[in-house]
Amino acid sequence: MTDLSAPQRSTPERMVSDYQTWRAQYEALRDAAVAQMGRLVRGAGLNIHHVTGRVKQPLSLADKLRRKPGRYARLGDVTDLVAVRVITYFESDVQVVAGLVEAGYVVDWDHSVDKSKMHDPDRFGYLGVHYVVYPPAREPEFAGLGMEKMRFEIQIRSILQHAWAEIEHDLGYKNRDAVPREVRRRFYRLAGLLEMADEEFMALARMNRDYAANLPVRVAEEPEGVFVDVQSVTYLLDVAPVRLLDEAVADALNVTLLVGWPDPERPQRLTSLLHYIGVRSVGQLQKELARHETDILRFAAALMPRLREAWTPAGGARPGTSLVHYALLRACTNPGLDPAYIVSLLDLTSESGLQMAGTVREVYESVIGRPASG
Image (tube, rainbow, N blue to C red):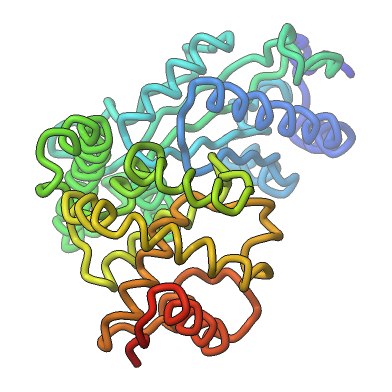
C-alpha cells in the first residue's frame, strides 16, 4: 500500500479517489482494530455494552475536505477514516478502557482528547474519551496489514454518554453556541441529570458486588435476614443444604448432578418458584428443607422416572432439583398452590402442564400416602 503519510500534498479529489481505491484495506484495519479492542476488554475481565467499528463513507470524506479546505494535505492526515467505538455500561469503566488503550497502542497525543475534562463547570455536554492511535503491528490482529503508519480513532463512552452524544448529534447541536438561548437551560439540566444517573448506576453496581461478596457471611450468621433472590439462590445452589440435597437426589436416581449447568435463567426460575410457594428468606428455606428432607428424596426418586422426557435430555439432574421437588410437595398439600403453574415456571418439557401436574399428584398420593390438594 502507498505510504499515505508521505510529504507530498494531494488534492481533495485525489484523496477521495485514493480512499476509494484502498477502501478494502481500511475495512481490514477496522476489523482488526475491533477484534483487538474486544480482546483487550475481555482480557481485563470487563463487562461492557459493545465494541463496534466503521469506515468513513467516501461522500462523508469529500464533504469533510470541502468544509475544511487546506487543513488536510494528504489522506494520511485524516485521522477518522477508521473509527472504533467502545461503549461501557458505567462511566467508571471508561477510564479503565482508556488505560487499556494507552498501554496497548502508540497514541498520537496531539490529536487525542479526554472530552469529559474539557468543559468548564457551566458548559453543557456529556462526552467521553477520544484517542487517535497507530496500529500496533506486534499484535496478531494487525500482522501483515502493512498499515502501521495509518492512524485511526478509538472513542470510549459510557452508555449514557453515548445516548447524549447521539441525541445531541441528531438535534444538530455541535456546541453551546449552536443551541438557541431559550433551550440552553434544558441542556444544562439534562447533562446534569445524565451525570447523576451515571453516578447512581455506578453506586448500584458497587452495592450489587458488595451484596454478593457478603452473602456467605450473612447466610452463615443471619439467614433469616437474607431475602430469597437471584443472587442468594445462585449462592445456595453451591452450598449446603441445597447442594447436599441435590446430590442425594442424583444419587437416588443413579445420575450425575449437573454442577455448573449453563442456564443463566435457572436461578431466576427457582427464585420465582420459591416466592410462589411463600418462601421468602434463606433461613426459612433452610428450615423447610431440613424438615422435609426425607419426603423430598422419596418424592423425587419416584417422580423423576415418570417424567424422563423433562430431564433426561440434559444428561442428569439440574442444580436446584431438590428445590423443585420441595415446591411440588408444597403444591400438593396446599389447595392455594397449583402444580401446573410450578411446571410452567420451570419450562422443562413439551408435555402439557396439566398432564405433568396430574402425574405429580399421582406420585404424591402413592409416595406420601394421602390425597393431593386440588
